[in-house]
Image (tube, rainbow, N blue to C red; front, side, top):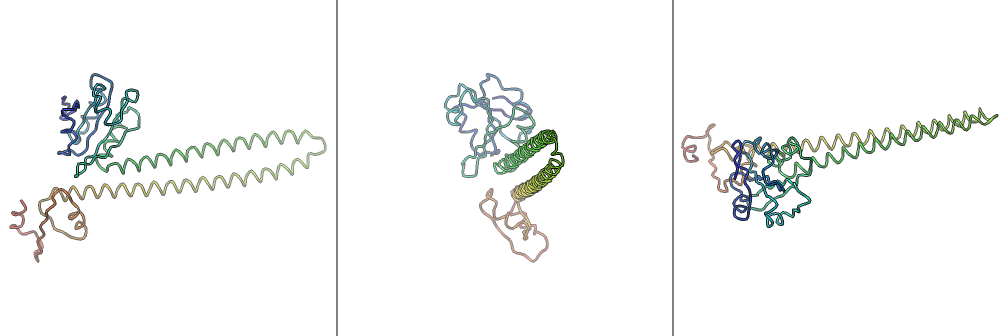
Length: 265
C-alpha cells in the first residue's frame, strides 16, 4: 500500500479487495487497471489532487481474478473505472473512455464524486450533440463547394456555345436563384439545429445545477445535528438516508430550544 500526499493508493488483491470496495467513509472509488509493475506517475498525481476525498486503488495484470471480475483484458489496458457504492452496498461502475490526460481524468472523477453517473452521461450526450452539429456543418460546407464548382463549370460550357449567350445568362440566373434558395434553407436548418443544441445544453446545465444543489442540501442536512424545518428543506430532511431515525419538535419558539440541541448532540 502506497500513500501519496494524504491519499492511499491501494494495490488491490483478493485479500483486500472486499474491504476496499465496502462503502466506508468514501463511497466513491477510483481504480486503475494497468500492465505496469509500478504505479504510474499520472495516477499518483491524480490521487494527490483529491486530498483524501476519494479512495484510489490499483489492479495489476497478475491479479487475474480481479481482472476477470471487471471484464478487463490485457490488450485493453490501461483503464480507469469509477465505482459508486450505494447504501445497500450495490455498486455503480462507470468506465472512463477519454485520453490519458490529467485534467480529463480528474474532471471525470470529480463528476462521479459530486453528481454520480448521471452527470457523466449528460456530458456524453452534450458531446455527441456537439460532434453531430460540427459534422453537419462540415457536410453542408462541402455540398456548397460542390454546388459552386458545378455552377462554374456549367457556366463555362454554356458561355462557349455561340449564339446562346442570352439563354445561358437567363438559365444561370435561374440556377443561381435556386442555389441561393437552397443555401437559405440549409442555413435555416443549421440555425434550427444550433438553437436546439443550445436549448438541450441549457436544460442539461440546469439539471446538473439542480443535482448539485440537491447533493449540497443533502450534505447540509447530514452534517447538522438539529435544524429548523421549513418548506425549503423539509423534503431533503426526510429523504436523508444517513440517519434513518428522525425526531421532530413542534414549538412556538423562533429558535431551537437548548434542551433540544443538547438531546441532538
